[in-house]
Length: 155
Image 1 (cartoon, rainbow, N blue to C red):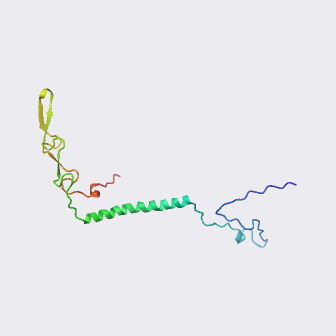
Image 2 (cartoon, one colour):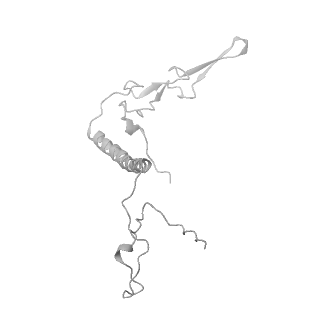
Image 3 (cartoon, rainbow, N blue to C red):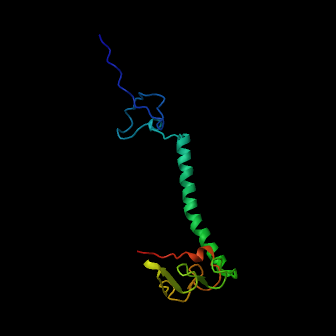
């Protein structure tokens, strides 16, 4: 007589196998009820190193995502309380910069063919020779780093 092969058993690290795989149910118990020892039990989570690293990265990412905007907001509030009297670096506190086209003269000299020259008014500064400083917008005071940025929502 040949012996039938054993049925494959389910093995999982999360389920504990009962001590006695073939418990007989007493005829006195209702059919829908099980013996309390036969319920599958969930063991504590087995965490490997990759799972711990992934959870740690997630927690740090959330903390940084919240922390950076809070830091910037507090710095903006603190900067608004302090007086700023540092002169603008590009214009030395004058609020105006020399025109780069005419080098401050207000006139452009063009050498034409045949040795002729043509002198005309500078179209960049309109003959003034200076332009409003683009860093301080003419105030002469060096703006703070976050004051130079214009945060606008384009939506």
